[in-house]
Image (cartoon, rainbow, N blue to C red):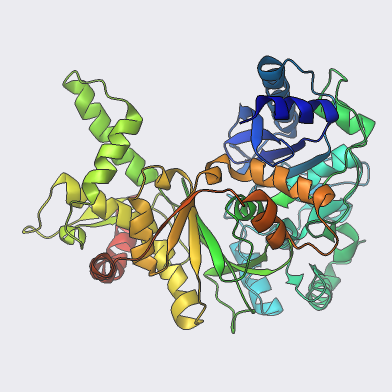
Length: 533
């Protein structure tokens, strides 16, 4: 990295800032004029149960943003000896979906209800049937309709309904705007116009007509914008919210706020047709860019969009690496009992690497990583399980191969709906997240399981806030007619190093043996939920 180039960009203000509010961390990333990260700042937080719903306090939103920005500014001063005052563009992203409802006075009417809540089964089911479009429980419209069905008093007072990124953007700019990717997790999008589906909006209004509310749905939702569209400027009040020291200058052009799924697509250069990405951490999900809409409604799939408004099928699984992490922790504890202090990353590398020495079907070991329910398999709750016949070979290699298979098994079943039932073709998937940190292990298994080449990029580790910084830079740097896909390919990822692994026929056959047994044992998982209370 050219330190002088970074200094020049900081002095001239040709740097871009992305801030993402994730489920466990708020992170700010500053990039130079060539879109490389030059400074970061973070704030850790966690949700809490409020009146039976998972929530975050809005006071913590601003504490976290201010703290992350202050750490980033301090890092800039330490590295480059420069006070951060000028930036060329700014963008906010956050966890998608959820429910943030405000009154005309701008008062939050009920505590923020996050994507994690599963309290809208009734409304999600009704809306899916009425609209002819899959409405997952996480979506904002499912939360709104459930509040109406519950006859919650605040519903009649709603003046504005938005997501977390939309809320922060509103306070920084005064504009009620949302990026199309995040908006697609609020209400269905009409792909032809890149805006909320007017026909489905009319259907929803008719559905709630008998409640005599003083608003229509179009009155309370944000204005939808796509990547590259103007979405307001940082006001003086907004600049003070970010930087109470008053050093940050106002007037910064702001990109449309986006969801963390969309920024993950940008961060992995997966916004073009026939591409997609798999994010694997505490949860695991894939985002697949489609050439055309799917033929029918699948309750296992979310239909959302890229930040540019192109159709995306999302396969979302609630549990990813939690059970794998638990077993790694068990081995770590065992080593410590024998007086061996080993670095945790080395334990992961060793155990994951040993999995490659296991039998291709994991020796008949079947594990369920379910910490919570999974819609794709019709499981309502979670009970981690390890099953095997007496004659199977229980060793470390088979054990961890089984757990790695399990971490992607439910995703595989969801992806089969796309690739087998809907005949969706993919050229490549990009893997990112903790599961892929050990080089060549989960990447190769995923490629073989899905029978699709999988690549892993170095910059993918920078994550969503870097993707948001890049989106904000696209707003001011793009040429006339330059698409987001072209901008990423020609300017951002032109020097990117990526490792691509092709599917292995042998591993694919072994994984399919595993998945056949896995399907057969789903009823065992359901029985465990009933019995183990």
